[in-house]
Every structure is written in structure tokens, then in C-alpha cells.
Image 1 (spheres, rainbow, N blue to C red):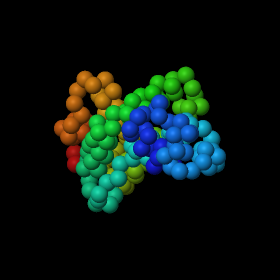
Image 2: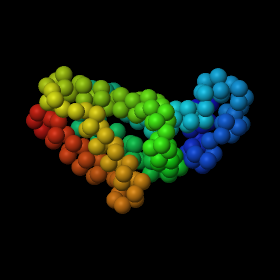
Image 3: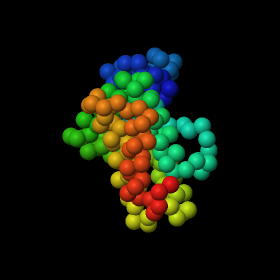
Image 4: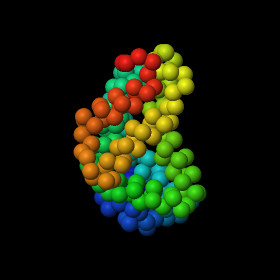
Length: 181
């Protein structure tokens, strides 16, 4: 069901996300979908998180903090460039969150926390290794990295190629590292 919802998001974006379309594509009944998700918004958020998740080819800890963050930023940018309907869905959901605190809380729980979890773990490993200042605000660092990416992609002002990922990570890490990596 989640794969079907994600495929609909990739192909047609938020307008395609109906419980009927998900049921048709997944081959299950609407009642089955409602057993797992209470609403269209709930399944949309889980499908969005699944599509935005970055699966890195090398095990965590086998690369530097900088290398992992660059890979995550590059991967997210490539996925969003390849699937503009996902970017449009992200924009639509975030726009609706401004007037819907419940949607904002659900987005935070289902999307933000899930997507930032692995990056937070990389910062945690670097902190334990004594590479990051104790007072460094990891959440703000992640907001700056991924927020900057979303802003550039949504506004279409600047390209988000590999050089953007490296420059953005380097700028953010200057604010949290004890010494350059």
C-alpha cells in the first residue's frame, strides 16, 4: 500500500493521492488501507517520508561526518530533481501546515523525525569522537542543510548539483566542528 501511494506521488503528486487510487494500485480494499492509516494525509506523509529517505550504500560510521552529509544531501537533491511531483507534494503539505497545527505535528513525527534520524546519528558519532562542540545545535544544522536544499529546489533559483551539497555541508560544519575534518 505504501509503495502504491509513493508511486502515485511520484507520478502525479498530491492530486493523485486518493484512497481509491491507492486501493486500485495496491490491489487491496479501502477498508484495508484505513486499518493502517486514518486518513489520506496520514498515508501521504508516510509515503512522502519513504520516498525522501536516503539509503546510503556504505554502512554508517564507515565514512566521515562530512562525507555522509554530502551523500545524504546529494541523494535527496537527485531524488527531488528526478521526481518533481514529490517536490510539489512536499511544498503543498508544508504550505498547508501553516494553518493546520495537527498536520504540522504529524509531518514532524512522520517525516522530519524519520528523515533527520540517520543524520542525527552521524552527528552523534562525530560528537562521541570529540569532533563536534558540545553546544552545537544539530537540529539547526540539519534545518540549514536540508532547508537550504528545499528552498533552492522550490524557488528554482540556483542549481542543486554536487557542488551545492559540498559547499552547504562545509559552511554548516564550520559552525559545529571543533577542528576542520
